[in-house]
Length: 264
Image 1: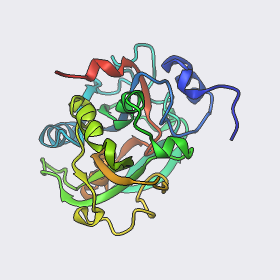
Image 2: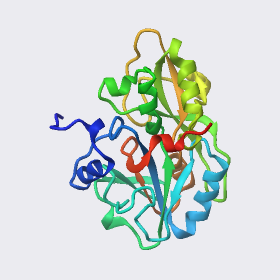
Image 3: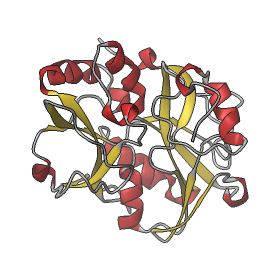
């Protein structure tokens, strides 16, 4: 789809307004320089389980904000609405995905607690600034995401496997990619694996569980980061009665600069 704007140059507020008006596109490469977040919202009686699951699994589930029950706002973007300002949502019943929608207002319950979880899209601006190519952005595709054979540490009623995002990185630049992302633990930090996908139980990189397949460039190797879609895999395994999440790759754009999450 062609557009009359460059998504990378939009402010987060401009991007959120487009999503609120009905634009549905993956957010990689949008609003350069600003952090993006994953969303999982559950009824209040499941919130402690999700909170503890995230605390025990900080690499895939780094929590940046938690709402009060029923409150669709977030301190990460004052004035924004978590029910309307993402480009696409998923609705879950008893661990099954029942619909994807562009506006969650009609399904948002008065007891929903929303968790905003760090996203690896947040470090992509810094990777590009270091001259590290992002093949999915070059190819106009969503990032590739895979369910792995690594189980997260269970917490209460929540359990499930870790999900990873994969980026092809030129072998000569992998060390730089590791260094840059390691300094951003709030948005997943350093890769959890480099190289052979079979070690993560991934049979075919051309068939991601979420997102799009991406073509490698000359000299590229696959590099895997823990991914904030992990709570969705936990929903499937743990089967809470109801939940709302973002659609993988369709993130919430915050007003927080990426660099705010750098350490060291």
